[in-house]
Image (cartoon, rainbow, N blue to C red; front, side):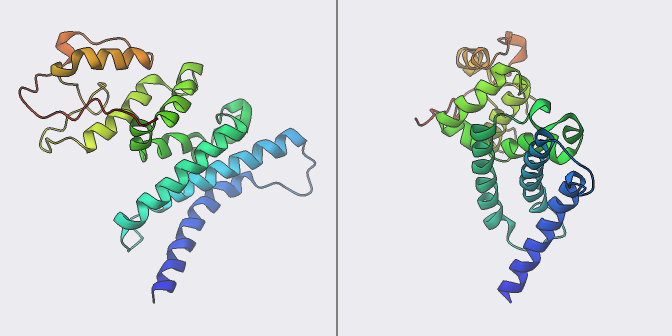
Length: 214
């Protein structure tokens, strides 16, 4: 019974990225350039990753997501890192303007980063890798702060009023971490915050900033 459930899950997930990526299929009767072929191939790889990322989260799947989802997220993250190291960041120039118009291409990196914030916070090698893309202008620094803050938001000891470190769409940081927060914001290209842009967290236990492993 388990094998049939597993096959069903795989089929559903595969159908998600296939429906997205088939838009990039090549017409055999139309000659294409080598560059176009490469762009379409790279776009297809991004669509596969995005398909797995979104497919595992569909409400139509009935299985233990808590167990399987982190494994798929981890594989997706590794595949995205390999993609960037091998090919470069997926810009319009790399994958083509027409391909970048598709959600599965444009949103692949953002979705995978948001589902793996712990990899950036805990592992310096990945923080540095994506910070380089921030510095190149390929990743918006405010979005990068949101990815990092998602980790702190998820792991906040205060579950009623979750705390963040950088200051982002997830909330305002604590005034108690003002110096460290502003130093971290400057590191990723954001302006330091004024006192009125912080909140007072009193004597709360704050698990921030997290020291990254080398």
